[in-house]
Length: 613
Image (cartoon, rainbow, N blue to C red):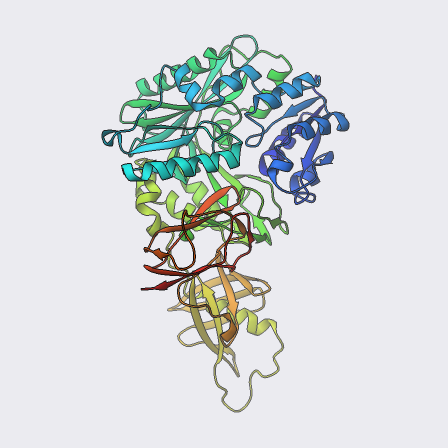
């Protein structure tokens, strides 16, 4: 029997595995980098071992250090979570060679499916050996790893060489393996996957389907189980192919077989030899704990001949600290408050007061709703997100809400091009126009009344806020009867709560302040100084870093004095596991280039200046 488990991972998945272990009476061990010394997964584990350094390559990707940590802590088993070393056959062998229990598939199975090219050959498929104009569009993919890293869509032959080079560079950085391949890109396809679970006695379960079509940068945003709208024949075919893939490599444990579905056809993508981020929706529908099953299988227990029946529907939304309206730029800072209604499941690696750093994935949490029907589950999840309290960095909460309520999604007609078509509409909700006024009134009542009402009429007070990238100015005045604002009746105002009446309707606002950041309900505002800072101006055409990160490369042949075209890539930043392209805002001349490869930049750093022609 397993008595102590080290999780070779961090954040949300480590906390989720620890929760199951605690329920089973199993001792837990965390590993942590220096930035994660006080992270939630480190705090909740029974024991923790430091991995010196900050970069993943120096810490969570060091198989030798993780195995030493397991031995030193007295753990008798290792669970890899997902990401990092979870699909590394060498790490699995090192764990087994150390006499520890590996809670995952055999190294041989990981190896067989680790390369997407080899996996396709195993399934009787093959990537494109040569690309012709007739093959377009195509998808360039990294042979190792996942999570959207090393993926590029190519629609023009002249873009193929640059896409291959870019994908190789990103794959090498992310996975230590620069192998890439090219396959046909299916337009308007749905990303559908099958969860499998296999024991050491020859039993393989196909635990239904999941739809993961809503993706940004080839990374999933909203997932659900079961995948809606599939015919019985297609669903049976997907189950059969998934089981065949598992049996082909003598698979053991939890894994996922992924497909791109177009019409009635299913195109095999890959097999992920690990637990998936979206596994909670399958758990909700089948009423099982997949991590608990992984542990039992690692202990040698057999699965029943048939899985439990599926019931109801579950939907999961990934809450990211990112700004979808600014090319999905990841955000950092203090997460002042995080809470969601108890009616949904919250899997997270953060608590109120924790910091979002620059080193790792920007996912804050996964929010999961379950109900008897799809429509009820979608409504439940949207309602919970709307009522959630999220104070701190900018998040994709509004995008998630708008996505869940979009007609294409509610009628289950979505595909992987959903955000390509609808992103501007989904990221541009009209913020509540009363939010700045509520913030100003809460601020006015939270400070001293000195300088407030006098017998003589006084000029209106003015406050300026930035909301959704735009500046808003509000006016109010102190009167004999309290605060007054044009066209709005103020029923109540204190530092934390404001009640306004507009056209006979009462509106209630909860207000929280953190320095110059103000949250009014679900609206985030930045308090601006009364007069703009004249020193904060930059020359026209200045390109500023919208996120902290590392300059990974500069466009070939680019230098000060170079002529550039509007939209031309100038340089690339890597931040929080994603690569971001910085392009010329206008056609003109590169007057300054302050960035160099390997340079660490902070928000607002001047990267380059393009003088318009």
